[in-house]
Length: 143
Image (cartoon, rainbow, N blue to C red):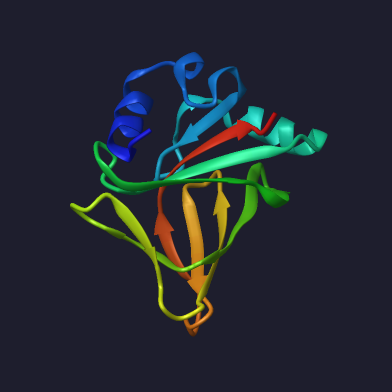
């Protein structure tokens, strides 16, 4: 599904119609507010050892530039929030207006921690230290 179509569908539909369907647990806004589902559902799933899948959006909420999905790995529960490491991906860039994503010429790896607090703490191998971004995130059961 195209990122713009996905964002419109997420904003306008209940959890049952979410791309994760009945596996949707919560959608978290950049300010940490839960706009669909429940944070406690994510915490309970993480505490039970369930496999999670996360999606996060870059760009404006009404029309994100790109939406990423990945299975959560190394899940942590801390002070009522859930965090997962994502990434280990080759740096890529979307080519706006050309509907394509290109890998960087140099073998640069991206890693991040995504939390139910609305924060994405991320870095490329070449960055001197991590950067913080506030993102919309979607938390779902993987299976």
